[in-house]
Each structure stands twice: as C-alpha cells, then as structure tokens.
Image (cartoon, rainbow, N blue to C red):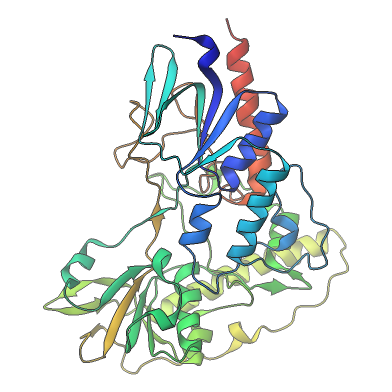
Length: 413
C-alpha cells in the first residue's frame, strides 16, 4: 500500500459540522478531503419547509474562524440564507470539498480506513463522520396501518400548505418541527389538528434578549451530557421553540389548531390519543418558568441591568380545547387528507461496516464524538458532549478537539 496515497483524514458530509472540521484540519496542515453526496449543505436545501428559519440568532450562526458583524445580531437566517453562508465559507476557506460523491461503505483494512465511493476508494488514517445524526425520519410502527388513507409525509418532506391535498391536516408531534409546521398550516387557512406530547418549551425572547443569548450567558448550553441523560441513555428532546416568536400549545389552540393528546396507535381504523392535553400544556409552562427563573437568578446574582419581565401573549393566552377531549378520530369523518409525521429523526449510518462503531440500533457508539475504534470520529451529533452539541455553536471546539486527538495518535509510537 502506497503511504503517499493515504490521507490524514476523510470527512464525510459537507454541512456545518463537516466544513468546520475541514477548516480545523486545514489549519493543522493535515491532508484531507470532504466527500458530500449532494451539494454543500444538502439537507438544509432538501429537508426544510419554505418558511423555515434558523433557531439560533445570527450572532451565534457563524463558522469557525468567522465572526458576525451584521446589523441584526438577534435576527434569524432562512435555510436558503444558511446554505449561502456554507457555500461562501467553503469557497473563502478553500476547503477540499468534493460534491456529488456518495460514500457507500466505510471499512478498516491493514491499519487504514477504506472510504468506498462509486468512483474510487479513498484511504485515510482517520475518518470524520459528519453526515448528520438527524437526517432519517422516524415514524411510530402504527403509521403503517394507515396505508391507502391520507397522504403521509415526514417533517423533512413538508414544504408548504399549498403542496398538500385539499382538506384538513393532522400533525403528529409537538416538538419544534411539529409546532412550527402546525402554525404554518393554520396561518395558511388549513384546518389543523396537532397530536401533542410531553415536551417542554421556551419563550423566544425574555428580559430584553433572545432566549439563546441567555442560554449562552447562564451556561445552560454547556451542561454536560452526563447531567441530563437518564440511566437508559435516553435524552429528553430539546424544548420546543418558535423560530421568530414564542409558540405554545395554548397559542396554537387560540389560533384555531385543534389540540389532541399523544398519538398511541390505530384501533379499528380510528386514530387513538391519550387524554393528556392539559398536562402537556402544564408541562410546557413549567419548563418555560424554570428556565426564566434561572435567568432571573443569573441577572440578580450578576447585578445586570436587564428589563423587567413582560408578559408574553403566547404564554398567557387561555387554551381553546375541544370539549369533550378527542380521544379517537376517523380520518374520513374529519376530512383529514394529509398527515405530517414530526416524530423524530435519527442518523443513517448503514454504510459504516466497522465492528464496535455502531450499537444495535445502528447509531454511533462514542464518548464526546470519539468512537472506541481509534481514528473514527462523529461530528455534529446532537447532545454528544453538552446541550450545545449538535448546534453550529459547538463545531469550533469539537473540530479542534478531534484534530488534537488525531495529532496525538500520529505522535504515538
């Protein structure tokens, strides 16, 4: 095997995580390339709805080595604006990105890694998997029982209300995608049902700043993974957050969204829901109050001159709930023509063929993004190290740590 043909690293994926790692590799003069199955920022182009905005404000939506100097630090980019940012970054930093290259297999052979593509096989001492941990939608098993009924699509396939057939729409799932899509639909004049779950929420702004600013200042984004993961390894979903303003279950109901409890399955052709809407509203309010209390305490302890709290209409509005609660519904009777599944995502790592790297669910085994097999790294994983992990704010430190780890391995005898 020709050592000259072995790269220091191959990065798989040219989103914000992959490009951030590429920049760190370039800064360390490490020979590498970035392989991207589509275009730079492909999932941001193809898996976001038309009105989608970044949940982090502009001041935090920057790549390693860059800084924000615009006029709207607490504004929000569209997904197309973010794609432009990534393309510009790759070009300015002269990163070695190869687009339209699909990796079909990753394997270990004779002390190096073989990254197989239809065009050629790349050899590398290290491989950084930056293909995303939230790019393959999950649906509950009972969704398959609805075949032949309404149109079914995942949050990643939804674009706008006009693309859906005439009739009412059921959105299943009330985390960020579900609530934002439900509001998108009701504002477009569509009759909308939302099956909500037990998920916290946050206000969009509080005491003069965007909530993300306070999460950074208070250190709540830096809580280590060990402090919020349960014994089974389960991590609670991120609190629901409106992209441009506060969204709550009660505010959606006030706009006309029909709130249902958690979806539990299909029985004799009818969709079945739990009777927990009020509990889900209460839990969302409770989580919001807890975060605001932490912010109030931080302001007090640090003697900050912050504006007094102002009542947020989206939190204060009284819910409008169906009476009696809807515990089951017939899709035909309700004229529901489409179901949008907002029930979570996972990563597609089916192309990795290295023992010990993936668990029984074919998801990464890692410690802070570093796999137990030396030389394999996972960039951009949600909650990999802290609550900041999985956001663009984490990429600079994560990339620097990965590269330092690679250099340490290289120096070892």
